[in-house]
Length: 298
Image 1 (cartoon, helix red, strand yellow):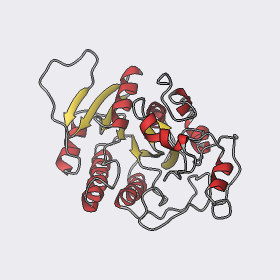
Image 2 (image 1 turned 45 degrees about the horizontal axis):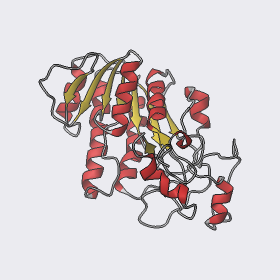
Image 3 (image 1 turned 90 degrees about the vertical axis):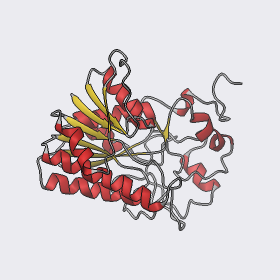
Image 4 (image 1 turned 30 degrees about the vertical axis):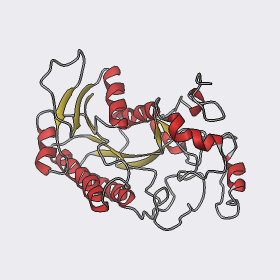
């Protein structure tokens, strides 16, 4: 496929570009960083610097090539490091402009990287608990923070895009993304201390599994706009979800639905397995021991 991948310099974008190139796709990578005039590495994708909050830039990156799909991973990745209006404007307008350009240029498929935060947990200003676990695509959404709000509105923009065009759109809601060099820093403390209640209820996703899911979405011919959670199938903990909820006094406050395995995640990926053929193969156990230390360091 001819793929446009935005946010190519970020954690998710880098992994997705690498996976797409390795799979033989022709990739155009887009990000805010300045392009160089050095000789490119053999097999390196074409790179375009663009600010997608500018409509002219968004239209320009799609004007030169007839792409088979866009994977839109560009975003400020969380709401705490920038003023709220900056997060909201950047993430929403970048999505709006790129979707608008994709509709006008007749791009057949668009993959929108949304977020697990859309229902309202992870960054709420007031205490919030999900209606149930594992969370699935049917869970109500009630976002509070500018990041989750922009992602939620982005999904509505995807609904509007398929309503006014023949484009097929998939929104992917990843859980907390981990890569080789941050597993210990991010997940180690909660493995070492089950008394920590993570904002994402022990859900996580390996960046390579997420990249695989994004490529599956880009190749999918599912009609309309579908939303999928993408997470690892297991919790990032040595205890089970029922045990963890009991430890934190949440058993009576947070209903637990049927689990598909003893160490099941707090996010259901049943829909992605069924409709995308998603089959995650990586786990925190590939990187960490049960005390949360990097394997090989102790």
